[in-house]
Image 1 (cartoon, rainbow, N blue to C red):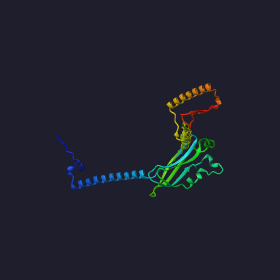
Image 2: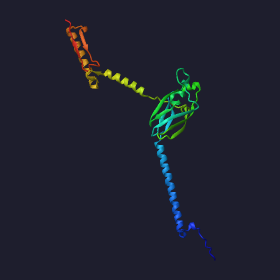
Image 3: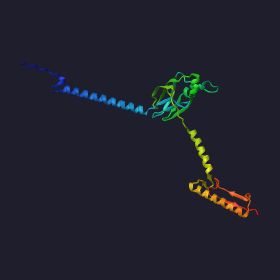
Image 4: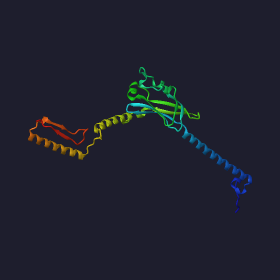
Length: 257
């Protein structure tokens, strides 16, 4: 039986490689490692730039039937020369009211924002759901938001504002700083009724029991004096408890002889 010996390609026979072959392989390994390192450095740089760049967002913020428009820089650095481009033209129900500037012609949307620091929010009243529905104004806007970072690099973010996503949803009551102020006023009025010159007048359950006992004793004593001295009820001057005098009290009884 004859055996046929098959010859392996040189690149599969490292024992047959020459010095030049090994040098070429070393070069390829180094080149591949350098390419991978370059890609990693580039990705790390891009990630750092994305994390450190400004990022301006604009969105509707409904509460009840009221619609606010909020502009926020959620990035890490200041955004400069912030500009907005709406398609279709931004419109609100109040635009045709005499004496009011249409929202699309306000300084905010015609000249933009010169500088928007990180974390800064600008909130403005936009419209009412009821009035927009009556006038048939559009619910959807395509917006291009463009701005620059401190180095001058320009960014453009494309976003869609759609009021339709808030239709047929339940509503919650949102309390703001004005509601807090009203509640604080109520608390202040209540505390004013509890105070007297020496401080806050507070009656605990034990004070109320003492109050009732002393009042019963006082009425009993007064009734006895009326029976024994035949005093007129009009001759009695009572000084009963009040918010200013507190739970302790006394009675002054003057007989008219």
